[in-house]
Image (cartoon, rainbow, N blue to C red):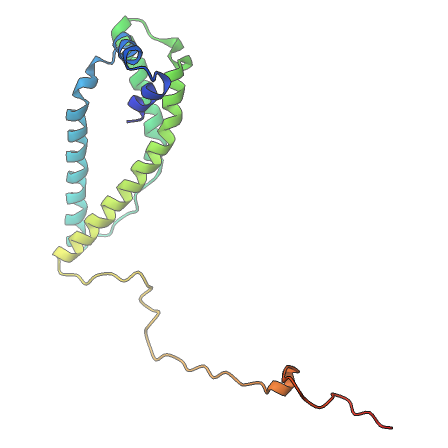
Length: 178
């Protein structure tokens, strides 16, 4: 996603962009919708696995963030170099200096964070679906020990208004002797 967006931002003219994509070995992009469908199927398969584990009552681990922070940069770099290597047959040492490469690398940050957020939501929903399928009660967001036991009664002592010196009209605080 960031890959295509980088080319759109770096080369706003459609004709120039198409020419640059053809010259740098991006002919495979016509299959991107199929690749996207494959990725969605993979996410659904992982969600089903998480739901089944939750239905069995297995403990879960939180979604780690490190793959979402490292993999986009590594995969983008490998992809750019591989595309140019396949097209030209020469390893493109200067690919990292291309405007589209630098812009694409910067765009990996928001894409990675969005992907991480989506992954957390998908896993949380899958776990809740698994719990519900197993007949487990819905988990409360409050700590379970908050409402255990008898609630304690708190009595507030009332301070007389005159003691606070805000009664409005009152006798003077000192008496004047004449």
